[in-house]
Image 1 (cartoon, rainbow, N blue to C red):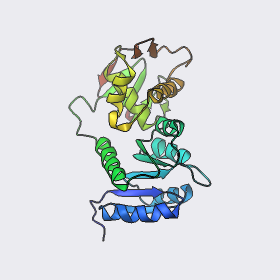
Image 2 (image 1 turned 30 degrees about the vertical axis):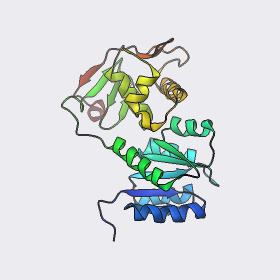
Image 3 (image 1 turned 90 degrees about the vertical axis):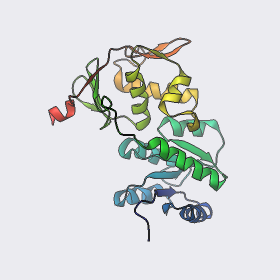
Length: 248
């Protein structure tokens, strides 16, 4: 019988020779594991129960892991570790760009995977908010509710953002008009253990600009400081007013 306090994992991998023994190993480590062989079965499993973390193979028949990862991050906000048989940096960067929390290259040592699972889950735990932390952000007509992770544009339209984009935006909002270089952004957004790359930061910022700038090629809000990094060119105010609640 499963302990209700067990960490629930969803393992998605089409290779039975890896999936089945890995599920057994993780179960022996104290996790509650559900293992499925493709994205379609993973989506069905998510309708029945939301796991604490998903282990997701990139290369699968049908819908691939990158597509499913995007759904997990943007719609479900579930921590995700990508499993990939490829060693190329491109695969790792793409996964991290769309919001995966970490990656492991096959073949891997199961003990290392367990360590990474626990590391990702530690980062995912949200501490109780300080008195000011539950306040909403207002800037240039935009509104961000950090508890609901809801971003609203100046016209009141909700703009969907991924977990990675949310963390990056909060870093800028907490340091308005300050130049933040890539190293500092990496440390603030996910920490060095996440193995992010400089280009991943650049691409996440490009994604934010496409959602928030009138012309992403000539950004006025999130500016590039050549040789220095990036800067939010806006004054930020904290408020207890939730625009979404007012409109609702």
